[in-house]
Length: 112
Length: 113
Image (cartoon, rainbow over all chains, first blue to last red; front, side, top):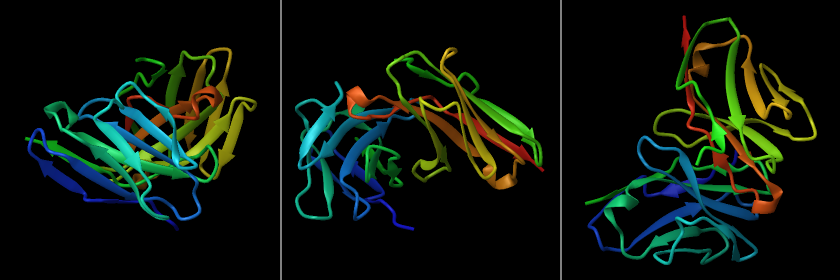
């Protein structure tokens, strides 16, 4: 069964550094999403992406965040200047219509 | 943000019995509801969904019921199996917010042998 794959599985970064989290969505999917889950809290929506542009973003997705689909397969989330509170699990998801969304196994981001 | 609530942090059920997981929501604009299952160190796995125009959807051992007037949905698993032990998340979405998923806090289901 096709899967969403995310790399790396764990990223450790110094505060203030830039990180790029990578995702390969399911190949025929057209809608892409990033969510995050801070330890002990709910999963939170960050951003959705369709037709090479952001279709929706949450209040969390401020100017330090950006997304890109640099080629036909990858979908990346960049955090420009990381803060301690960015430490979380980041999940990528994709769908071929609006629902359901299929998720990767996540990247655990640890900011030191 | 309490738009989607799962009030039971955990539930323990005997193998072979029915597991019933509950979810409440407050936003009347939600028109699509999903249940995801999550094992440790893995991402959420889609289980079953229901549109707001329906009140029941069934897929094998899993049935989701939607009560729109009560803003309540439930997931029934019957019979429960040891492999069903996981965290179950209820999620909801609305057409007018580009189908971003709003999540409950999850219920940890433990199936006892």
